[in-house]
Image 1: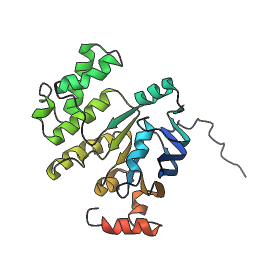
Image 2: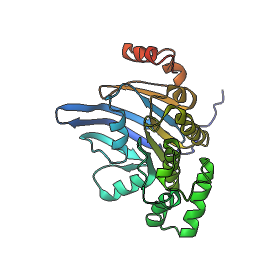
Image 3: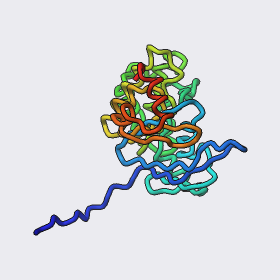
Image 4: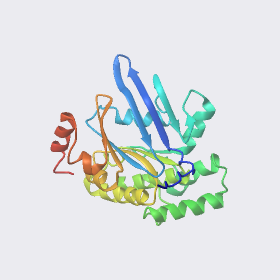
Length: 257
């Protein structure tokens, strides 16, 4: 009997590896032994009730929050207290926040080009050309010279996504990117995120938009009280969750999903 030779090709480096992460706020155990792996090109949606640790987890990934125990690597670089490693991890991870965080005194174009010019040392011509191309990609090509205050919330969030893309991140972390938006503006932001996902962008998304999770996620991670209770593909999580807590959650959001 003949056997097929095993492949010797190296496996791609995982984008993010989290092992046994623990974090406290005083006596509050915010993250409890959290382990998670994001492969290159994968999309993970973090869901669960408010206060379950979702936002704390992704803020730990790019060093906005510290953790007490465990290990965390992005692109093979350990978040270990080294300032050089922290800078490298922040170069590899983009963050899209709930409240946009655009500079109000700068135009849209200036918001997009500031980071590449100061951090990546791009020329004004190169940065401006990339910025205008990304604004076209998020369907805001005609808004380059406006100020954030002249845009709707949905437009500002799309500018924030474009600004993150300007830094060429390996992974984008989304922290409830639509929760501050009026309902009619939510879909325009989700459509941009879905397009990024279809282009192979690695991402971790904290969201209550369960239709997005069904359509886009490779893995749905359900958290409660700082723990990961479920981690499954959407077709499994939304039909046959294993824990009673997750089953209650799915029943509650069933109409929205």
